[in-house]
Image (cartoon, rainbow, N blue to C red; front, side, top):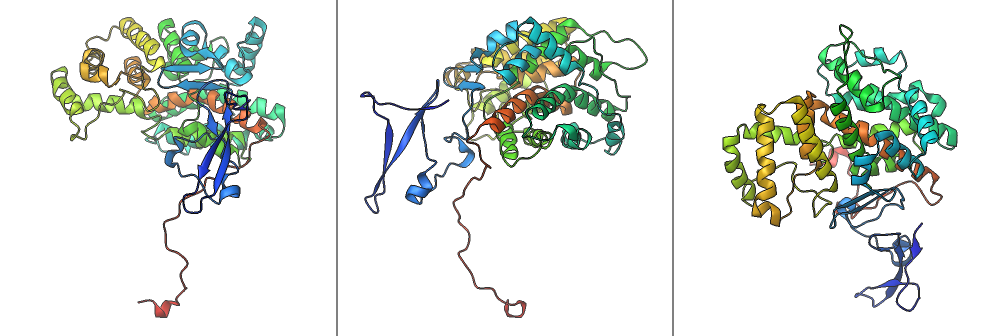
Length: 441
């Protein structure tokens, strides 16, 4: 919980605003969290001063109080419930991280066993959903299918849509986490004209996901353990990322009292944007544009030219002013996958490794801290695994579902939460007199 900040003399700390036009002064309290910058509490600003704040993109505005994820972009720190992301990705599996995000601490052996059991037995989709998929065109973008199918879950599982009921919230949360890989895999199978593959209860979460993506009824499919480990790490690294666009969308939709399935569908729609979840897809498109290793110097030169609109995708990050903490372990995972699959002669992958080398050695990139980020490496991994570009953001949605669900639950349980209602700086016409049609020239 946040506390009122104290000054050096132990007094409640405030910030004083002065209206130069009238000379009036206003004091606003300063609040402190457990770590990170203090915040100015502006909740009473409008009632006290008749002013709103103006902050397009909300880059300087705290929209909520949360105990789930912490980011220090300058130091390159990402914590889930206080645990560094590097420690979790190296030592935990995705189910442990899901439990951590939902419940606040890592599970013991019994808690993990029960949690995995409960998630596993929610992975099946309602049989009638087969027909729902058939309503989409075969060439539909998988994210369009995801938005539609996830939004429709409330029509199939209306026994867990009462947001005031804690058990309903828990069941809905488990269903969303469990069913998202099935929904995603079916979107892929439908697009390529293959039959749906049902989940297997004996497989772990990431193994099951790969099985549903790549198995077919004609032969036995054995999950590669290196790829399963890579997928598990990818899911962990993307599980939550504080109040980003899609998470804020989930919270804003949830603040109206909408059911959880509708809220997560809204998050998926927000994630679909190329500036958010589509970044790793943009990396592959950039590599295809460059085309050959011999053209890398040309594009590096263009990237350094301020007057050239070309930008290297997958380098740097809006939040991290240092090395993306997720990128180091993603880089290791990337090289493990490339070595396992022996795809060194794949032109785009060879090209990506040359770009990585230059970015880590070139003074321009090092000085500006334009390091390869998590999207750069995840796109390469998915390409190597044979996952089509159109599915990249879908896999992001599978991973981020647990973060959305945890944030949604936290919001619902927060006694101070209210329906979201941003204000605006109006710049349109002032009040005008209506003219009958005949008088309009």
